[in-house]
Length: 137
Image (tube, rainbow, N blue to C red; front, side, top):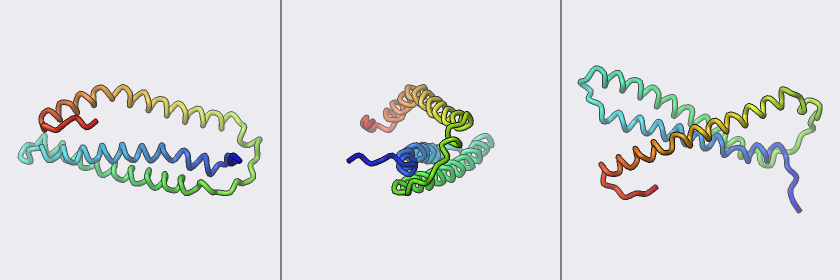
């Protein structure tokens, strides 16, 4: 017998989005943190860059933690009992607009990531060549 869809199951299924965003934010923060090691501490511009990178990395780590916590809570809602819903309240233009905005934002993110993919692959190839590591991607 197929299980009935519930808001809790839908919420749990959607947890993959904030979890993936958390991984991207944490990865970017880590990239900024290791980049700082290459900066010359005696150079004024490098010191300025270091400050910005450290502040951004801290904020990205915080955002990643919040996103991961949201994803965990969403996942744990899988068995949330289905509450009574007012169908008239959930079939309004503002509900439609909110969901359309969500879908559009996911589409925009997908396009952004696809556009960045080639540039990121080129940078990975260049770094691998300098490091001398095998292609693992």
